[in-house]
Picture: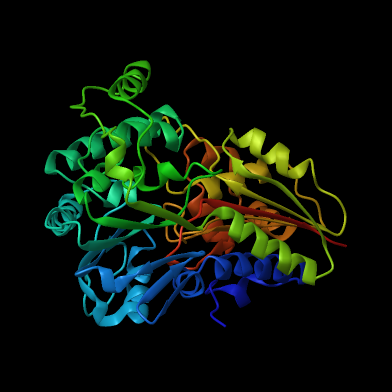
Length: 423
């Protein structure tokens, strides 16, 4: 079995730490992109079956694959293993390079778009634009796609500007994606319109808390319910600046031949972690798969459910307003350091918060926090309040040796939290 946490042995210095890390490993295994595709898709006698629905590939002249997001590269590799030479052409953009025979792979930038993203976006646009009613287009849609999928060229300039402005506003991913949909020719159902009248299969790997799947990668294969007016209202209310907005397609006909399948969400990861915790004879409680509040609220929800010999699980994206660009670290590291500040970790507890994509805006996925962590930080003379004020949590856990290192996981289903308490 693949060991997702590369420094597992170095971190597993107590029995409780080992248990908590094993539960985290189970969550990452449960959302492994290639395994999910192999489990969800079956191809036999020219029939492609997906979650109970079947497609006769003999009815299509060309099979094309496009994709974007953190799961795109691994997804493309898995689709080639299933469909092989049935794939006529394709292009995907992710964060890692993959060797594919029929699908061209691009490496882009995230969380802000760049010219590399536009190059891939142009290729994806051309592949889809040159399609007709006899074609089948399989679309890999995953978290990170809002930045990685970028076309036309002016979208990347506006997208980078929007990201910087939103970082300081503390607004939700749903709100930023509402604006993103109205900057793009492909987001907000734009891809579906471009593909029409071809048949489209959307394979969705959701990073959005809750069931708002139309927001994954800003919804290229979903009919958009928002309008230019909604986007402009968000821009105006938050003083985000000037943007050139376009309306998303509203005609039903563009979506009549679109079939979206949600293969992965954070609920899959939570279920896998719950099962692993139960194997250790621990009581399990899931407090939420849609955490989106401020840090204090998130920690209160998780720790208020704490009891002996139990595991508390949660998932979502805590809200942090970064008022100035200073230090290194993401939501998970900030959450872990905040738990230390609030003195809510007791001697029998281990708290883990980690990014399922393996990158909490740093080389670390997150951190493991217990009394040993607190003791090491105190011994090093590190001022927790000072680091939190500077949004500089990464060096604290780097110095204490409590960073969780996975590298890019090729998956992304929001942040995952584990609170284990055991005597």
